Length: 110
Image (cartoon, rainbow, N blue to C red):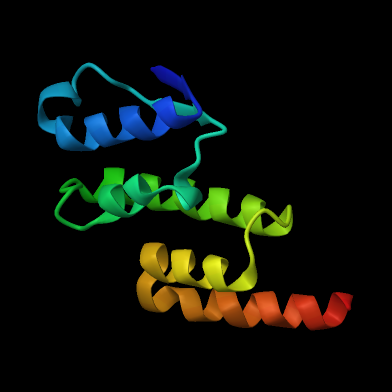
């Protein structure tokens, strides 16, 4: 089990995705604390389809990035445009229901 903080989390996740074939028998999990996935260019590199071959690992990474985006958006750390762009990068066409739900919640709370 690997535990990583801040930018080191991004670096460890990138290394795991790159060397997963060699490390999959040695690493049972990855826990990240305050890793800036939504705000760094390396997040896009990690999420490229060619970078993560294993579907399960890719799904986990997508979930981590998506949850970080949610928290950043709810905390006001990123604006609507950045949120939508990052969600589109992570979720592709699945991001549109998220935008719709987000706009509905925004209208109900304002």
